[in-house]
Amino acid sequence: MAWQGLKLNLKVAQKQILTPGLVQMVSVLALNRLELKEMINTEMVANPVLEELSEEATATDNYSDETFLKNETEKVPEKQAANPFDEFDVGSFFNQYLDTGGDGGQSQEREISERPSFEKFLSSPAGLSEHLNWQLSVTICSDAVREIADNIIGNLDENGYLTASNEELLQGEKYTQDDLDDALAVVQDFDPIGVGARDLRECLLLQLKAFDPTNTLAHQVVSEHLKQVQANQLKEIARALNRPIEVVKRTLDVIKKLDPRPGLRYNKTEPRLVEPDVYFRKVDGVWEVFLNEDDMPQLRLSPTYRRLLARDAADREVRNYVKERFTAAIQLLKNIEQRKHTILRVCQSIIARQGEFLDHGPDALKPMMIKEVAEEVGVHPSTVSRAVASKYAHTSQGVLELRSFFSESVNGPEGGGMSLLTLKRLVKKMIEEEDSTKPLTDEHIAQKLEDAGIHVTRRTVAKYREDMRIPSTHQRRVKA
Image 1 (tube, rainbow, N blue to C red):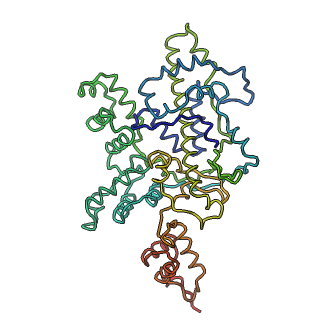
Image 2: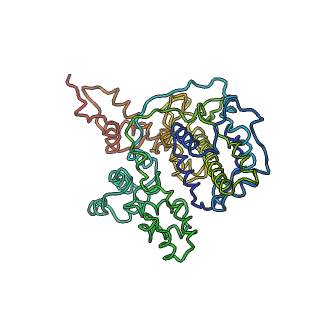
Image 3: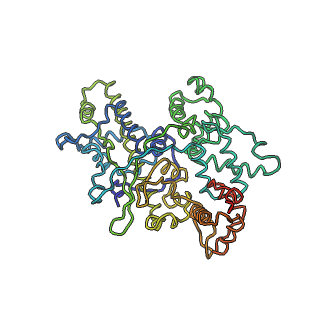
């Protein structure tokens, strides 16, 4: 498969250490390809060590000094090295970016004899509520927890903060406190991490809990000294905690990388240009995934700055600056590669489960939950949510949002699972084919489904009909 070219050595990590690089990785993964291109262009302006590989570049422009690579990568601070990116084959990775930049998708192009034409169209971006409701729809939980979680989502402000009180969410004695606690935990586990918090402190603590639950110092600083953090009062915090000021500074640098308004990214209202992030193509009878690398800037580390760093006579301040820029550039390149790897693995899991849908269309869509894919890929469910958020696949069934492949399961014929989306399509088809002078009632539809071995109640049919904005029986009736 194409993603194998990334040359990653996988290993199981029991915990993550929260670093600016890890925070950046989370952010990069959530970007679609248009946003990624914009981010890369911005980084190239900000960091002179990053260069776009030109078509005219030749082998004489490149460097393969393995000693330099080894020495410089060893100089990355220990705390930055202790993160998921240690999984990379470093020598192979850096040779790629010092010699020729990324492969630019060339290996993929060689594997596809007839690549689909590039397709673009305008689409309204998913808002925060829509993004969260989609995650809720493919989450396994009780009806009570689902109802409260839906209410929580409806009471989030544009930044993702919860504005309703516990009393309002409990609706008197309709639900228990345990139901509320479970529902809040469900929502707070969704992407973007930090939603469902009541204030900034809780928002930041949720992010720390997700990324680095063992970092007691960061938790303590946010819990007890948030106002001083906002005022950048390092000395006061260091004195109160009896810690060296450099330790506190590093902790604050990490905290300031957290997102104080996690919901804001999903509350953009302007239409956006949509491009496929991946292609689902059948090669020799097997569905495969290919990243869309068209027009994506291919990066390398600047040979000029590499030579400057290699000079022993270079000014210390200049060398330190260049080292910092190299460290930032290397981290970004790793994050971009990790994004590719994660998206490809998630999409591999999708096509392995939804091959019949790709072959036969919507009626063949199978139930598929985020948690199932996350377990197969070996990541947290919120990572899968970020990997598919706002991203599209060019498929045999058209250009589709990746999240449209996920759907909860309902009881199908002979006890088998049926996709909720497939069931809704079936209900819609029944209504479209009904006699408009004698339209089907919800009870009649439920009975027809029961006769077909699909067990749903009248109330459930009514809910599905309302979800699809189909009028009631009375409203659909046409007088003869």
